[in-house]
Length: 317
Image (cartoon, rainbow, N blue to C red; front, top):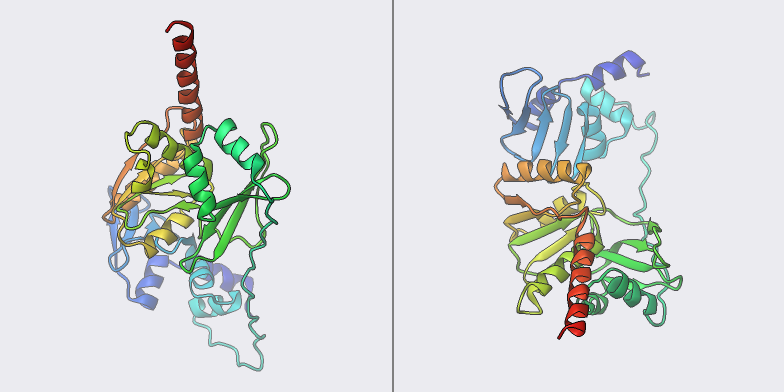
């Protein structure tokens, strides 16, 4: 039987020493001085970082992180908690007769809401209320990246490499609705993307509407109406880098990351942190934050100015 003392000792095991012994990894300290300052980077896998406490870690390319060796074994090697404690503490594993059977996890099944016959609310909401270019909306509709469900919500879909829908989120369209929800069975590794292959530049946003708004602004300021198709865009559905990390692993042509997260404290901090980390492993990174809180507000402000100028031209030709 594993007691609480053994578990606590396993939790507090130096993660760098653990990685060196178990995986043969070596680490370089980055930052000023030694001790608890700065962080450690793995030489063999530069996206694996350990904080100065030598316990907290994050493997950016895999989109996983945690505290200590137990979290690593459970999350990265899919061990049961008891097995992880035994591995760290050096306890011989129990016999198969004594060990409970490991259950086989059934993959999540994405449950998509039923489509509406005609996307009337979708166009009204995205094009009129949100100011997004209708050609962009129609292209994404044709590509199956979004649709309207029978309740009048817009459904944004993320696909895997085989073209299977793996994640979906809903956005309400009634008035100034703030209704948002992820569909059951969504896999957060597959974000809503406006991918263009091959593309060396990836724009990163907190929401699908911001990505579409940025694409619209690019078209408005360009002579070519298809300017938005030249580069890829991705929604993180927040500030977690999970979808970006997964996409970068699959698309090796991407060399430049442009962080367009919200212009608030959480967005700025996340953008600065990710830009610093990915610059450190060879990507060209930069911030392109919106003037307002997000790119949809920037687009609506621009549309309002356009409308005002048009009315003035009509009154004083």
